[in-house]
Image (cartoon, rainbow, N blue to C red; front, side, top):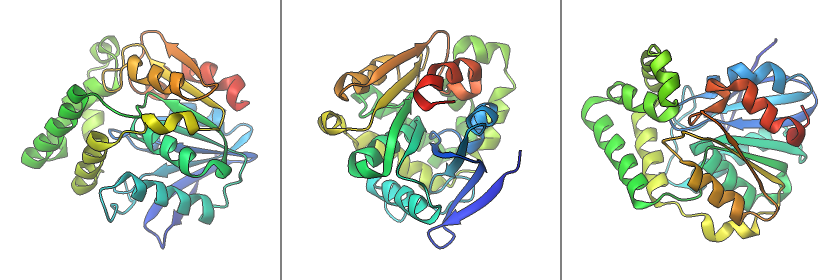
Length: 262
């Protein structure tokens, strides 16, 4: 599979592309990068042109100028413009990437045809906001490598992590590719964002997919999105954690197959 490297916003935003056909754009979570979708990429690219974006501050993309959700949305708009993404695109976002995808779909309804929100929240309760604050504090004190175990527990289900303890070191290596200022910016954004009042205005056909054992954005937060977005459908993956493309790639593909047209 041939991978093309892309850059936008005067080189500030990095992405890769593969496949041909209708556009799929993929946005990763806070504790990952585009490689989180590697297990499902061949299937996505079989009939589609897939663009995987490294969000600002993650693995080669420059950090955002301001710690605002709008700054991330504007960067994705740049990507759509400069990468020639069609207006019939399918936008897929996991975790924080899902929150960015929601915000983008709300403000750029004419730019996408379908939206897949995977283990993402429109807002977090106080307990969730405190968890982001604690992660940010821990990173400030000990660097991104210091939250490798915390990150692994948030990304994977307990059973999967128990069977694959090497995933802690894998998370550490992923985290070390993130700019610490960008990480703090995202933690701040996730503490402050509340898109819930806007969700009834979202018009793109929407599929919400969530792992049963997601500890980062539990099913209740994903169901909230599905309940508020008109016509949205909700699919829960038994036994899965926060990142289905990594933990249960086949189940994730089965969940989105008909909606996306794989």
